[in-house]
Length: 117
Image (cartoon, rainbow, N blue to C red; front, side):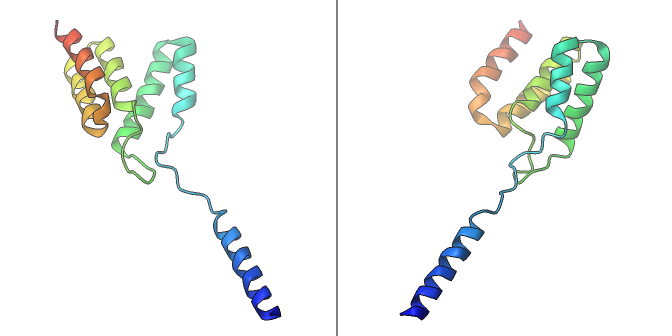
């Protein structure tokens, strides 16, 4: 009986300890939050350049367990490029967003239609 009690205590302890491990994040944001905050606050050329560098890193070398850019990054970067006048690359990134995240397709399609008008 004592042996069963020790075994069950050991099993519960092992189960508790193993459930405390952290999971790897799905996406790695690589300083995105600070860059977006600076861009939103200032919206000057320097903050736009910093934000586009972060977007390039997130899109070219995605990290995290999914190994894809985080949701919305391609769309936001595409929108910024369109505002700067690079419509072709901006549309390409918007389309990439719909490929990575199909649930965004209806919204992105409306944006592309407005650009083409």
